[in-house]
Image (tube, rainbow, N blue to C red; front, side):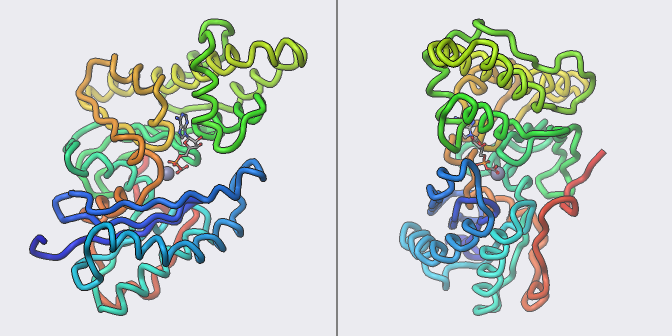
Length: 338
Ligand code: KG4
Ligand code: ZN
C-alpha cells in the first residue's frame, strides 16, 4: 500500500451501480459494475427505478469491491463519489453513501465531476497519457470535445458539445427504430457488422462549421428512410441500415475530431464514454495517426475506477467540510467552457 492509503470511489450517476478501489498511482485493485437490466423494458432509464436499485445494489457492490481488492475500510485514505452531472435521484444514493462512509472514519472526501472521470480513465495504469491532449467524450448523456491542459478539473476547457442528442443517444434511438433493445449501442454494432455501410447515405453535419455536434437530424433521416422502404424491405435491409447509420455517427464524430486536432495543433487524443467501446469508431480513430489513448471498453463505459482516478486530482475536502455538499444534475459542472 502507498503512503496515503487506497482510493475508494462510488459512481451512481445513471443506471450502473459502481464501486472501485485503486492505488494512488492508478493501479486498479477492484472495479465492480452492476448494470441494471430492468430499464430495458422501458426503452430507457427511469430515474426513480434507478435510484431504488442503487439503494439495493450499493452495499453488495461495495462489499465486492473491498473483497476483490483484498482491502478493508481501514486501508482507504480517500473516498470519492460522482457529484454530477447525472440523474439527481441516482447521484444522491452514491454521493451520500460516500460521504457517510468517509465521515464514519473522518476520512477526506473528493466530489468528482462525471465528465472529468471519463477523461481520468486515461490516467489509470497501465495506459498512461498525461496532458496536454485533446479529449473526445461520447456517451449516452454527453458528447463533447475538450482541450486538457492539466489533470485536474480546471485543466479541462470544453471546445464543443452536442446541440441536441448525445452520440450514445443517437445509437440508442436508432437501435429502437430498428427494433433492437436498450442499450442500443452494442446491439446496433452487432447488427451493423453484417451490413454494408455504403448502402445508404445518412447526414453527418459536414456543412455545420465549428466543433458542435448534432445528431437529431440523423435519427429523423433513419426514421424517414425506414418509412420510405416500407416494412418488408426495411426489415430485409436492417443490417445495411444499421451499418450506414453507425458509419454516419462515427463520421460525424471524426469530422469534428479532425477539425479540433487541426485548430488546436494537439498531437495527442484521449477518447472516453460508452460510445468509445464501438469497434468502428476505434478503427477510425486508430487511422488518425496521432498518439491515441482509448481505454479498454470496460473503462470507457461508466465505472468507478475512472472516478477514483479523477479523485486523485481533485482537492480533497477534510472531515466534516463535505457533509453539506450537494449533487448537481447539469449546468453547474466544475469544468471550463469557452
Ligand atoms: O458512458 P456510458 O456508459 O454512460 C453515460 O454516461 O451515458 O455510455 C452509455 C452509452 C449508451 O448510449 C450506449 O448505447 C453506448 O454508450 N454504447 C455504445 C457501445 N457500447 C455502449 N455505442 C456504440 N457502440 C458500442 N459498442
Ligand atoms: Zn458516462
